[in-house]
Length: 318
Image (cartoon, rainbow, N blue to C red):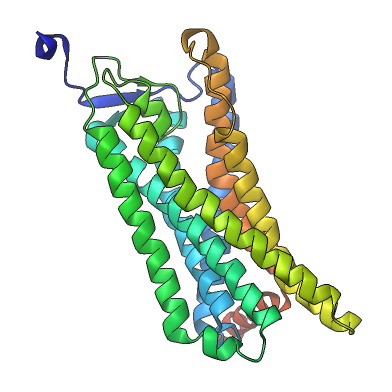
């Protein structure tokens, strides 16, 4: 009898801004411009970190990984969102939703770990400069990045598999721009306690633990900087950390704003609130990756010099 009442969902419908048609063109233009900035800005950073020998250090290796991650993350969701905004095509296949959810979760989890790794790298560079080449050898920092990508992928496989194997009883309307896992779980007609438990464990491992590493790393960094006698040394140390710290604040600030508040159980009376949360989530998905290359370019002399070198090289060869 239970099987008869359950229908297989072959596709989902993403509401997005369907209730605000006049806003769709505005947000299409904004998101398109930001996506192009993401591709160009992060692409330039990746190229610079590969071809400029001055950037062949652990910090810029992690930065290159972060830029590549931002391109992958936005490319898994933004193109389909742009299509839905301009063509009113709001349906997404079941498998397409699973793929989008997987990439979104994998990239988010990996970024948390990468930001923690970058904080540890800055801690070693400033607090143990003489041992830095030994501690952060090429084998070590490549292994650290690999662990970040692998753990993020495994975490996403677990979360996506648990979510997409749930039964969905006919209701296939997602009040969101994307196949965001919490929005999809609301449609399930089964007990989702296990999903919330695994999400809680995942949040502890991928949000809280990296944040603890970042916090203590910067506490030791601040203590070391304040003990420096040279004002020039203090300014240089602050400048190398300020870009990363700014990215961390934006990234974690947006995540906690979206997820660290109580969710209303009355979904029917809060459609506007859910649409607003979806909009914030969408902008988190494009604004943060767009700001990353801008922040690192504006606050880092090495990156500025590398970008200028590449632009001059391109001009000369034309």
